[in-house]
Length: 167
Image (cartoon, rainbow, N blue to C red; front, top):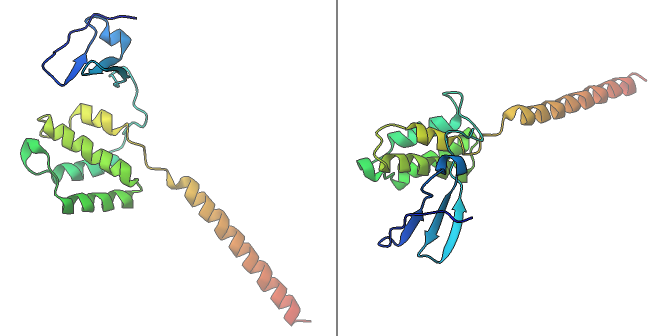
């Protein structure tokens, strides 16, 4: 399938967009110095995010707000190594993987570099693509089962000890 494209030969990285039907096609073709063509999917407003942020206390959102408060340099969007370490520790405490913490930080920095003074709708949409924290209900259930089994064995051992002592 061949598409009419516009190409800027002055850029080292030329991005080709179909002249018509981009909203229908929902992809962009990128050529790197004319060597290779790749198809890159970009989420559109028509697509639902994988892990939507529905609560203000969502760890990804809280971490993004903290990262935004640590930004330095305006549009540069820099975060000092010390602040980055604090954010990574905070993310770990929230149950996020270090990789996902770095993604959240990168999304916030990219948002600042695009000139937004607060987290944009696009940044929120991209945050929803970061893997959600595993719900603790499964882990809590496993702990509860182990606790009940331990208590049952303890009661059984105590009952057997009482029977043995009274004989």
